[in-house]
Image (cartoon, rainbow, N blue to C red):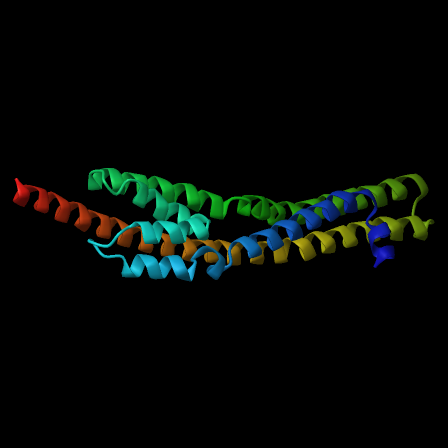
Length: 212
């Protein structure tokens, strides 16, 4: 393995760095985008059982104990429970957009690694072939060691770029799909919170009119 890396010469440095960056963000996003880590069951249950007349402090306390994207979205709605429902809708939408951005961030870096790694390998191939033809132009075909070195550089960098780029692309698509599913669930529960708070606001308005 080490001999192959040495055969790739200088282009193996950026290719290796790309592999380290890709691996780092794959692991980081896998940890962040765990379904149970984001869609916390306790908060989901609190939203499901939240009624228009129920005290909202219980759900808020659960969100305080379980901080994260889900809790932030739910708390944004609960913080504006006494406002007009259109304000609550806008607040929930904005909170959802912010959390969706946090969930999908760094996936662009992984996509870049997937795209750049094969290009770095191709660049190494080109540089290796340039060395081969340069050697041929200077010494003819009488130096097989130099020729094989240039060809090895070309082949090794191409293979290394593909070995890094293909898994990075697969991981990016898989993690993007996971992020999309989590965002869809956040939107689902946000709509439930909005509906509950809207009904609560209507009930409060009706009781106020009755009392007057």
